[in-house]
Length: 244
Image (cartoon, rainbow, N blue to C red; front, side, top):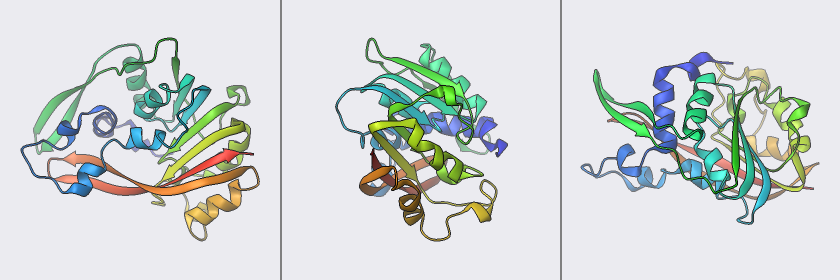
């Protein structure tokens, strides 16, 4: 898998993506287009597709620096976040342990703004664990969960079908699965022979339907700030499933 996610540049961008306030991503001194403002809070919005009733256990695959994992913990007694990037997991673990993690927001050239990722509040009695791991090679000892979340992960795996075929054993009967993907299939991450031959949605439906019932689908935009004048605005296909 690509080493791009071990760079300081990506770590800073993802800490901003997961933990920054809205005005730290889009400073109020500038009038930003409405679609950019609406694309903030992606890690919170994908988690909002789970039911609001409490659950015993949750798994956040491709958790990056942990923003979505902390959101899952609001409704799950225990949550495990797993990511292939060691630098992402190290940052998430520092935040989980109560540390404030400094990072840089790149403005332009040599100009930066220093920011800090603050630990979010965790419901008393709930626990979070962060693990370095490969979503295509999850150990059998990991167990199964009431809720599984994987956002913007599937189209970044060399062999995505290996994860999809593992999902039925990861989600407890009656459990919930939320997948989000911008469907940006790139050869640098996934060999073209492992891309869906048709639409990503039809591909997911074909693989998952024997074990899961599709509840609904929608699009969720997200915004990643690279510099003061360059942003990635993307739209992720979100599918929500019930384990048969």
